[in-house]
Figure (cartoon, rainbow, N blue to C red):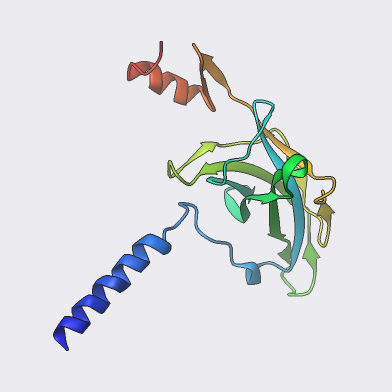
Amino acid sequence: KTRNFILSFFFFIFCSVTFGQSNGWGDVNPYQYPGSMTVVTYISVDDVIQTATNLELGAFCGNEMRGKASLKKVGQGTNERHLAYITIYGGNVGNDGNDVAYDETISFKLYDKTAGKVIFPAAIETIAFANNKVVGTTAEPTTINFKSAAKIGNVKYPTLADAFAAAQNGETV
């Protein structure tokens, strides 16, 4: 019995660590918001459409995450594309519990699940939240663009602070 218990315990710990890893910025509680919208998008970094499935697009209202999605491979051969299908939650219920305001601006961040960190803290685009709105489709996706803020040699950095830190650590040419 003890042997089975110990094996079961280690199997549980292994599964929790292997399959239950967090993405670093948590989950959204969809029941906290009265509305939602959907965005179907390419992710572009420095004008290059991204295909890496370790990238995760996060949607934010201020510092509050409202949705997230990883890239998914769609189609095959010449029709193959990598898109993010992101559901964004929003809306503020008024003090009376009835009125709902949807006057929110959604911004985007790009997270690298392999590196375990946000690699681009701000996209060029923002989207005005609109309940039940769909932006982009699988046939005609929109594009969320991220640009490097600095380039030293052949290395690009998402922020000037990242470039400065790399230079201080001797990581640049």
